[in-house]
Every structure is written in structure tokens, then in C-alpha cells.
Length: 393
Image (cartoon, rainbow, N blue to C red; front, top):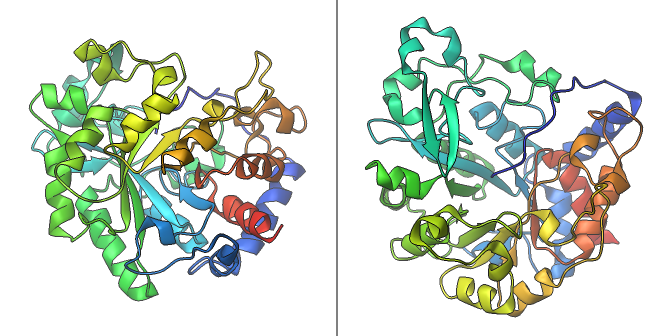
């Protein structure tokens, strides 16, 4: 999931942050092995967790662990995924990029400079390079320049050490997982827990990778078919910021598909390459949503497309996006809720420390009241408590 750059401030372990975390962890304990309170309360919406009924059976609001429980563990590691599942997250997200030899691995970006210890490996010093990816210049190390065996010699590190210093405790503990390893993990966990483990899998930079002979969609579809996750009611969503990637997947699998949407003035990179003049503002109109609904089942907008912020970071008037998307029978899984002040709208920040926790539950209440179907969060335990509160209100 694409996000703006975070600031590099160190987090203060103030009492506000500790209180929210302690409350969330205590509450999540009762839901740890299946989100029982959330699922039990789902009757208000006529939905609940179950096997073989597809995404419409998920609790609403659905709590989606953004890159795993990355508020507490380095993102896209089996440690982050496991913690999210143990907390009771309804769905767990993976971003996928390819290796040089064609394997799909779970990284937010193909640039692994900031999420692994690759810079500490002298044997890979000559792999550092500069590339143009989706119109932007990036200097570092990239997955497509490594074989899977080489990547497996690296270890994951916290991407936001300035904001989440505590997470650096786990630097070096986990390797980069392949998507196949995650599918195998989900299968094992599902058998042990007696319910399906839902995933939310994103193709990253698909036009770029197709251009260098490492197309993502066919590789992803092949893996999904191997593990029986390619069907209409399979327990995974497939998502991308490039609509053409979702259109391509719609011809390869029957699993539910989601088009991700960045800021209103942005253009998907595949539109840039194809000379399509439409922006995200065009895609969130009734006409644009009707077009998306012709091949996808949902959208994943940035939260600002639902309730924009002003220049001071305060929320303004809600748009009609939720209503318009639902009119096309599209679900909405917006992103991303994080507990720290620096990521929250100014309305919900508390105190002067950017990395202390703000009024997170107040922010969740506002978003849930808009009628969204789910939300991506770095802190699944907090999101589960907020969702359970909302269902009971």
C-alpha cells in the first residue's frame, strides 16, 4: 500500500501511547484466536466469519492488518503476519514483487534498502544502483537484481525506526518471506484454527515489472491456482494501484478484486504509460466507479478521498464516495489507520509528541460512520476494539 514518507522523529513512550496500547492488548486478548467479540457482534450487519461464503461473510467493518501487525513488528515478515492473526485481524495484507529468478516475495517495494540489512552485506555492494520506477528515481538495492537464494541471506528491518523505535528490537529476526511460504502458512493456520485465513495481496509496480520481463499477474495466478485460492469465494482479495493489473487478473482468476486509489490529482502509472488522461478524480465519479465495477468487486481509496483534509491537516466535509461506490455494489477498504499522532488527522492528535498515540478510537468512529466496509490498519488490536465498539453502538 503506497503511503507518503513519514518523518524521522523518535517516538516518546508517553503515558497516552502506553494507555491506548495496554487497553487495546487487553481487549484483543479475548479475540486473539478468532476475533470472537467482533464476529459475534457482526449480526448487526448480517455478516460474520465463516468458511466458503466469500468476502460478503466477513465482519463489517473488516479489520485488515496492513503489511501484518507492522505497528509492532517489521512489516511483511512472518512475525508481523503471525502477530496480526493472533490479535484476531480479519484479513492480512501482502505486497508482492519478483526476484531475478521469478519468485514472488513479500516486500512493500522492490527497493529493499530501508527494509533489510542488505547494506551490511559487502558481497552485494556492487548491486547498489539507480533506477527509474513509475517515473521516480530510486537509488538502492532491488529485488529483481537478486535470486531468491541471495535474498534469503538477508534479514528484515524496521522501515520507520524514527517513528517505531521499539520495532527495531526485532531487526534481523526474520527473513524475507515468499508469497508461497505465506500461502502455506495461511493453510496451516487455517487448519489449526478451524477457519480460513484471509489475505489481501497487492501487485506492486506491475507495468514496470512487465516491462522487464517479470510480469506479476500470471505468476500470482499460478500460485493461487496451486493453493486453490483462485475461486470466487477464495479467502483472499487481489489489489493494485494499476487498474490494468486488476483487469488482467480478472481474466486469470475469479477471486475478489480491488482497485487501489491514491490522491484525487494522481494518475495510475499504467494510465501514464498508455496515455490515458484520466486521474483518480475521474475514477471516483459515478461513471468511473461503474467502469471499475465492470471487472472488480471493490476499491481501496486513501482515507482522504472519503473525508479530505485541509492545509492544516484537519478534516473537512465528507465526499459522496462511499455512497457512490455502494451504488455500484463495490466494497470499500480504505487505508491506512495508524495510532501515532503524526499519521492522524489534526482533529485527533493529542499532546505535542508526534509519535505518541492520539485519539485513535475517535478517528475510527468517524471513519466507520461513513459506511466503509473495512479499513487497513498498522495496529490490528486497536482496530478490532474500535470495530467491536462500533457494532455495539
